[in-house]
Image 1 (cartoon, helix red, strand yellow):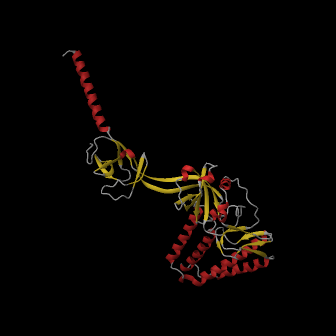
Image 2 (cartoon, one colour):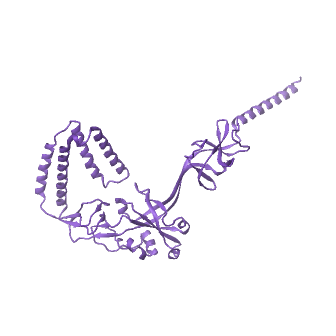
Image 3 (tube, helix red, strand yellow):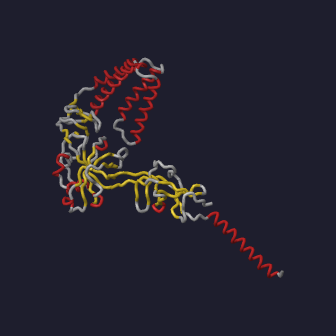
Length: 408
């Protein structure tokens, strides 16, 4: 065989081997199917807008002048005739009076602990109470809520003292009580002036602030409030009224939120529909509410939007001090497995998807809970013989698919 023939044969064999290796690599690494991994997804239908809050409120007025000391936290429920604040001649007088109150309270708590002693609770119960109190304080401070921390601190101090008794480390608080009583007697002598009490004429929820909108944005006056005024209030352009008070009482646990939405979004609201409001503050992300009223189109024609009134009965110190806010109103939310719509197929009248499982194609039935043109959400708790699972490889594109097909 000539050298030329040998060279040609060598080239032919080399090309054949290269094509064979390439073909085998293609078979090994190429899949004729396009797949996507199954993940969970939460979808909420939401409207984001500005809002203004309407309440029935009564301002607490007084003629007394001086330094104010409030006796209740914002949001506290008070009875008609209850003293809500004290007025002192100076800051020093107020501080001394508060010290008298604190000393009196600590003495009473120590005496109560001393009397009940170890019979009040077991060591395990004490430890659980301590853990619970610390957990409550941590939860409140992590959400930015500090109004009730003082009360929880006193409760924690009480169970810590009881732990000293039940563990035998401290059985007599008489020395501490005597010291506090001496401090109390000395401080009482230092208090020279008196104070004036400010009482509330009505029962309700106490708030230590006023903003001048107590009458202009009253629920009892809702029918007389124009949509234009609500629009101005939402935009912060409504002028407040004159107010002279040291606080106010919210008369009802029901209060209302007015929001301005586009005509398209207004169609999502119907009277009685349950929604949740996110006020974009810690602890106020899921405030329950319901649609109270959708104002008629004629009244909002000039603004190109509709006014929707939501009703709430959720009371917190943060909400009581709020008048306007940027809110997100959420309707029903859906959580499920998100799947490309092209993956959904039918087998024997059952809806499902084909999944790559090992070296086989497996058909798994699904139950859709939400559909859009590009994807569907499937029930994660669907009871099926072969349910879809998290991280399954769902086939999006492929030909000649059938249950049990071997794909090598």
